[in-house]
Length: 438
Image (tube, rainbow, N blue to C red; front, side):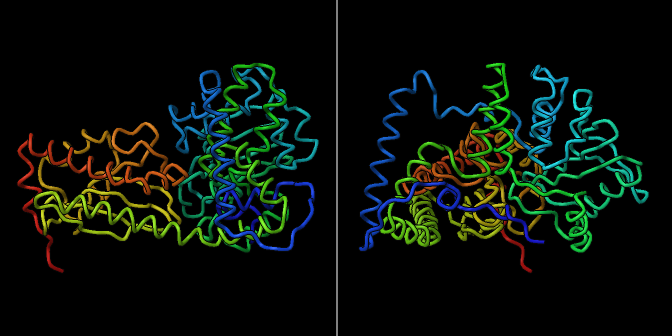
């Protein structure tokens, strides 16, 4: 079933389509994209000057959630806290009532809302298989289950089990909300397409994206009476807009959209620029590879072992500390369209790392995760030691790519790995392990 929120769209295209702009006189001649770029640069510079002038009191680039756990479980805790009428926010059922309206649930859901109970990781059981739903909200004899999927992949039969479990509880009403980072619904792996269509049509399953969640949070901000809680709501909004909508400065984006939508010739030039977006990204990726390659050539024994970093899933840029090494150090996209950027140790033949190497590198990176291909890896993050950037590319990523900053970060990471391995007398072991033959 097609979902109106499906896919992470360009923030600029979203604003052009959704912004209600007053019609202005249409000119006949099309504006060259280069002229529009100059005008956009002026708007951006003016906005940056305004931000800088008030930065001391507004801290416009400060994102509080960068210092909190914003993975799936962390976001579930935040959402559950807001929904809980008995939460420390002390706003009672205001946020939960607004949430039920945002979901288009009928008035009956708001009858006993003050006494609602909210649980995290609530146990479920259906078809003889137990599990846990991320958030469960009980409102009288009605139950809302929220499956929170900002990044994770569907489990086998997951949504189907949740619907089956709720259907056996003799409830007046029930609903499962599938909340995804992209706005896409559950896969056929989680629930068959035919069953999904029926559940949505009957109102038992609702699908929303994180970008749509901002409407609820904005209403919470209007209802909130505690400045400290309002600050938290604003921080959540900023995080979601940047992480899931690609917009870090809403006022700047609206100013640009208003200017572009003001005349047909500007709109035509802007659309031409949007169409060039993929080509721009490809050229910047090529530039990154070129800069890293140039730096690697100046290092004794170093080689670029893989250089296909791009918009496809599992594309990477990996450096080896010797010409034919099977162990490399680099970055990779975990998802398509430049999503899930991580770095770490690459085993090109999927063999385990030499003895004592893995714990040393885990300690160096502060990493916990590992697979056969990437025995030690870690997502980019705003406060990361080596790559202090967002895991999904944003404006800062492309600017860092063009300026050479990202290439420098990758080289600095490989240099530090080389230094630490040398100190622990493990460098020769890593350098001399060659690729196994198929």
